[in-house]
Every structure is written in C-alpha cells, then in structure tokens.
Image 1: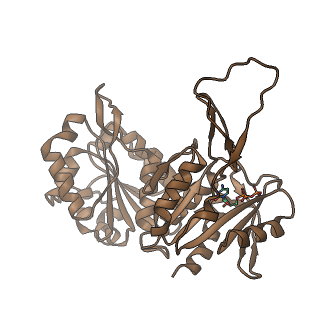
Image 2: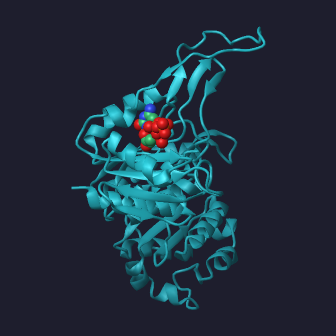
Length: 395
Ligand code: CTP
C-alpha cells in the first residue's frame, strides 16, 4: 500500500533493537510516507539522529527544549496532524510512562497530545517483558486503544530465548497499513481469499503441484486488509511472508482447501479463489517411499473436488481463469459454468505475467458483456482493481 500523503511520527526508544528502527523508517519512506522521528535520550546511545535525518530527509527531534527544531516547538499541533504514531522499538520504560500518562519527555508528551492511533512494538529482555508490571501496563495501553505489535519470541540480545524480540518489520508496516485503512471501503466486510498451488501427495516425500507462487492471492489479502476488510487467507504452501493482520489457514491438498472454504466462505461477503487448485490427485498415497524399481512408473490420478462448483452460500464469487488460449471465451465459459460474479482471466503465456511473476496482465470479466482489460501491472495494483469491482458487488 502506498503511504503517500500520510504523516507518521516514529518514536525510537533506548533498546538494542533501535538500529532496526532505521530499516523501518526506510521502508516507510519508500512507501512515500512523511516520517517525523522523535528519539529519546536513551535511543541516541544506540543510534545516531543523523541516521534518521538521512533516511527520512526531515529533522529529528531529540529533546523537549530543542529550539532548533520547528517540530519540537509545535509538537502539539504536529501530533494532532499525524495519521499515526509508531513507537518502535518501545522499551519497558516508555510503556510504563505511557500507561501512567507521564509527559516528561517529548515523545510521551506527543503521545498524550495526539488523537491519532498509537502503535507500539515492544522490545526488551524476556524477564522485563514477562514482569507483571509490564504486562499490566501493556493491558492498560491496549484497553485504551493502543495497538501492540509483537514482541516475537526467539533469541534475545542478552543470549536468553523467549518473548521480547522486536517484531518483524513487515509485521509493523502491515499493521500500520491495516490501521490506516480501517475506515476503507471494505470496512466490516469479510473476504475469504485462497492462494498458492495445492500439493497432492504421491508418497511420504513426493507430491504433484503447479507453478503458482501465491503472490496474487497474498497481494489480494493485503490489499483487502488495507481497505478495512476482515480477511481470511486459505493458503497452500508458499514461501511468501504471511500477511500481518489476516486470519490464516494453511492447507496442503485440494480436499483440505475445499473443507476450509466450505467451513468459512458461507459466513463471508465474498470468496476470491486465486489458488491454483490441482484438478487431479493420485488415487492412493503410498505409505512408504516409492522405490526406483522399474524403468517406468504409472500414476493413477482421480479428480479432486471443484471448490467453486460445489461450495454453497450467498456470497460474491470470484474465480481466476488460467488460460493459454482463447482467453476471454474460455474465461466466460468458466464464469457461467461455475456461476461466478466475476472471473479474472489470466493469460499464462504472456511475458512477465502470471504464475510466479510479480506482475500480472488480466482481463476482469463480469456477468453479461462487462469486461475490463488491464495493462501489465504489479500484482498489488491488480488486486486493488479486482477489489474495486468486488466492493461494487457487495451488499
Ligand atoms: N478451482 C476450484 N476447484 C478446483 C479447480 C479450480 O475451485 N478443483 C477454481 C480456481 O481456484 C479458479 C477457477 O476455479 O478460481 C478456475 O480454475 P482453472 O484451473 O483456471 O480452471 P478449471 O476449472 O480447473 O478448468 P481447466 O483446468 O480445464 O481450465
């Protein structure tokens, strides 16, 4: 999601993870956000303000009485103008100060003065994190509407392992996009999206699958999330990072995907089947690894259930048609056969488009004669075009 026109206050506090805030600032700037950084005294022991000044191209506020900074003097009005305040990393100390409403430094007083959403990403020693006082402070902040991302569990700088690691940057940026999109055109809508290529087992080590990467389905899930939707992503195995803020079901086979869709889609407003579902599976799965005994091997394949054909319910139905010839005609026939509201026709022979690629060239086909041929676009942009049409069909 582009963050163009959005103003983000990035508060950096004194954790060893402070250096990771530089990566966060960089990602937010790449998405065209205006990033105003505030650093606490302790943060500056870990990383220099110059880093953030260079990455954001904007002054960095380092103290309450920092007269050189127009931002520090007008922090109250700027706090009001911010779309979101993000404190990352957030130490046990800042969490305690915010929970008790202290305003003894520029970051705390900015948070007190803002009416915008505040997101915090805690990072600290495991014992400090698990301490009842910190837990109570976090509960207090959550009950007041603060959004808490992480911490992750794993190895900490102290050498210990446990919860306390700074959340992944993609989780923090995902959460920021979700918060900023909360009032979007899909707010209060539930959208189920399937993604990836199913895997049909042959034996304990082998399977039949296809070249789907899951990129189109994951892009749809993130785009729907960033427009305010409640999103369920039913995904076949994929190497992609799981989108933050999305309910995720991991499945392997067409049958498992069918069961998940059948359970969840009837409660949703729309089902978008971006997954490349195997049409056939081995009739039986060998219990042991098949040995290289003969010069040839014949696999007996049987049909998998057609999910779109079989799933019942009163929701908007969107399918994809992966075609290598007669794109629009074949897609229209599928739309009718599967009783769909929309079908996204995908020419899998087009250069730089379709399976595995970052871009896609599609035709969005509706009932009747409606047809919208899009140029080659990044999958995220294709996702938003598809969602424009889905939004128009939702009740
Ligand atoms: N689909 C499905 N269940 C299946 C196979 C496909 O729900 N067992 C869905 C896909 O997710 C997609 C749409 O149906 O949204 C069309 O899939 P596609 O593979 O293009 O078409 P098929 O129906 O499998 O027909 P064919 O392979 O003959 O082109």
